Structure formats: C-alpha cells, structure tokens
Amino acid sequence: MANILIVHQNFPGQFPHIADALLARGDRVAAIGGKTARARPGVDFRRWSTQRGTAKDIFDPATRAEADIIRGVATAQAADQLKRDGFTPDLIIGHPGWGETLFLKEIWSEARIILLGEMMYRSHGTDLNFDPEFAKESLANNIRAHAKNATQVLAFAYADRIVCPTPFQASSFPRSLQPMIRVIHEGVDMEHAQRRPEATLQLPGGLALDRTTPVITFVNRTFEPLRGFHIFMRALPAFLEACPDAHAVLIGDAARSGYGGASPNGKDWKSLLLDELGGRLDLARIHFPGKVAHSTLIDAFSIARTHIYYTYPFVLSWSLVEAMACECPIIASDTAPVQDAITNGVEGLLLPFFDVAALSDAMIRAVQTPEAFAGMGQAARKRALRDYDRQTGTASWLALIDELTAA
Image (cartoon, rainbow, N blue to C red; front, side, top):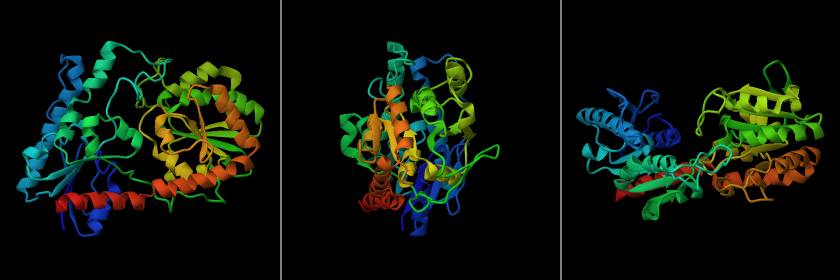
C-alpha cells in the first residue's frame, strides 16, 4: 500500500479514474485543489486559498510567473498542514499548469513526482501564430508566450516523470525533457461511448432527430477559432444548400471566451459568425443546444453521418475520441494533434485547415453517400479501442506509479 497525493487546481481534473483505481487497490489517497476543486469519496481532500492576486504594475511577461508562485506558496501551506496531520506521500501526481507543485519538495523532499505535461507554450508550431486571420504576431506576444513556461520548467525540473497524453503534446517539450516523458492517454469509457443504433437526439424546442435524418455534429467546449468554429460555420451555407434535408448540431458553450481568447466584436464567436454569414444560413436546420449531458452527446454521435473536428495545433479533445468510439466517421483538420488519432482515408478524412470549400464538399459527400463513409466509422471505433481505452490508460498510469514507488 502506498500513500499518493494528487494536486490539481480543478481536482479531480484529469485524475478521477486514477484516484478511484488507487483507492480500489488499497492505496491511501489525498488531494489538494483550488476553489473550483471537488472532494471525492475516499480521498483526504484539502483546499488551498491565496491571500492576494497579482500586482497591477508587475512587468507584463512576468505576470503568469507571479500568479503561479502565489498559487504554489498557497499549495505548499496546505501541504504543510496535511503533513502535520500525519500524511506523507510516497508519490505526488500533479498538474503543473498553475504553479501548485512548485514547492512541494520543500514539504516532502523524498517524495517522487509525476507531472501531467499537457503542452509547453511556444510562439510557433502550436496554437499561437497559427491562424493568420486572427494572429497578431509580435516580439512582445512571442516573449509573453515563452515566459509562461518559466514555472512549468521549474516544476518539471523536480519531477521524476512527465506524462503526456499524445505524441504531439509530447513534441512541444524541449529535447532536454524528452527522456522523462511517457505518452499515456487517460482514455475514455468505451462501454459508455459506443454507438446506440436506436438513439434519438432530443433538441430544445421539441425537435427529435434520429438516423433517418442526415445529421452532422460539431462539438466544442467553447465555440472559437482555435477549434475551427469559423471554418465550420463558413462551410455550412454550401452544405445546407446541397443537402436540403440535412441538419447541423453544434454542441458547446457560445458565451465563454475559450483557450484562444475573446472575439473581435466584443461579444462571442457565435454572434460574430452569424453576423458575417447573414442570410446565407438556414437557421431552422442549425441547432445550438448548448452544453448537454454526456449521454445526450453519445446520442448525437450515434445518429450523425459524420463528426467534424477542427483544431489548431493544440491539446486533442476528448470529444473526438468519443465520436470515434461511437463509430462516427470523422472529417477533421490535417493538423498535428489530429494526425495522432486519424489516418487520412482510414478512420476519417483529413483536410487542410483553412480550405472551407473542401470541408463543404466532404460534408456533402458524407451525407449523400454514407455507405462510402461507413467503413471509416468502424475503423474509428477500432482505433479508439486500441489507443484510447480508459482501462488501458489507467493500467499504464498504475504501472508507472508502481515503478516509481518501488524505486
């Protein structure tokens, strides 16, 4: 039996299944999180809180570093109390993105550490400066992006292993850190995420869609260009005109600013694109149900003729893997994170990110000749089972934990 501490601002974050698996086999688990974190049964949960925010007049590129150090100190204080209460971890699992793991070695110098490596900030090769329509490249912006790595690199310097979910995310790390990296995707529940042949998607307003109606899906945590929202919206007019009985279902939050920031109109990206496209869209066949229950998401993937997934070079979305698990043929951007999951012509089609006409054409073909895409849906499920099964991901995490605690 080992003592394991999990540290994540939004605990359980990416770690709920790791925590549950550790508890199930008899390990003792504690956790430290921020104000948005949630307690979990069986876990000794503590919450950190800060005494102040960042200074208003701090040197701009150092703002993120100061905020991370403030959070790191607060987490260390919570950890010190946990230590006083009798808990000493053999191993710490943490997300370094908010600075929380920075000073934990000052509390437990002998503990081994595994850190989740989502992505290192870069001025080129990832999301920043990818899209010429919205990118505002400048030396100041590039320096700011690079400076955001300061506390992450410090945290990684004290880690024993870094776990990256995908090869692309691992590739964002410098060569000096590559020997520390293990690629382990946390996976999705393949029992829950599978096609439901008799599924019906009930939409607000009373409309119900099933497999007798041509449906395409698009899912974003937040509608934004980073996830190709502008490309998809601009592809819709030609698609809807060519497929007069088809419907598009867009699931996600339209009100928030996402990973890529706010829209130029000061409102949101949905309103910006609707204003741009004006009367070219048949809004009666475009549905925005907002955030939905996970079961509803699986229903949507189950009835869809194709799922559209576009992204800048960035973290891969769980929704893509779940669509694959539901045997939904994929039409996606030919960007590096997607290339990790989709082989063009096998599990789906990969298209140039900025080619709106190519996307329209592919969506039309998916609706008008679904038999040509069915094999890709079956291949997508097979690929998801092979590379993204949660049981496999959890087992790999446990094996790494055991390797380090044994050492």
